[in-house]
Length: 166
Image (cartoon, rainbow, N blue to C red; front, side):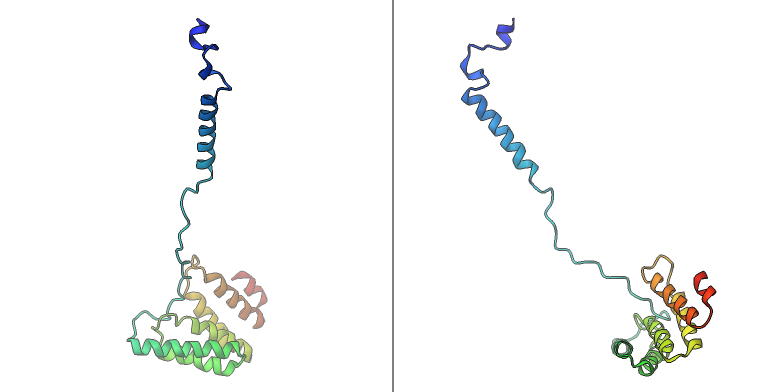
């Protein structure tokens, strides 16, 4: 009975036979080749853009005014980065007054708050930082930045305990 299941006398079925070795080699080569194959090739998808800072007021501007607002906001950013706080404050106020519906105009409130802090005008900084914080939902990625700006203005305004409660 055992003789019928496994025939040691048949050369081609012996473990060391060339046919058995070839089958074992093919199986191991197939396993090795498929285990190193990546499942999917990585795509060159662009990174997602960070969420936009909302505008102060809802509304759309014509293209020409939107370009002016973008240039005024960029001017305010450059002035703040250069440490020209008075110029940054004026540029930010210009955006707030003339282009409140422009895309990203809420950033002007942040610039205004930081410029006012630099000039020592704490009441204007507190008002602007509160307006900036009110633009965001707590789930927005920029909410934490707005909250830190608000806490900083409160702390510099002498309201340290209130800064920790925001």
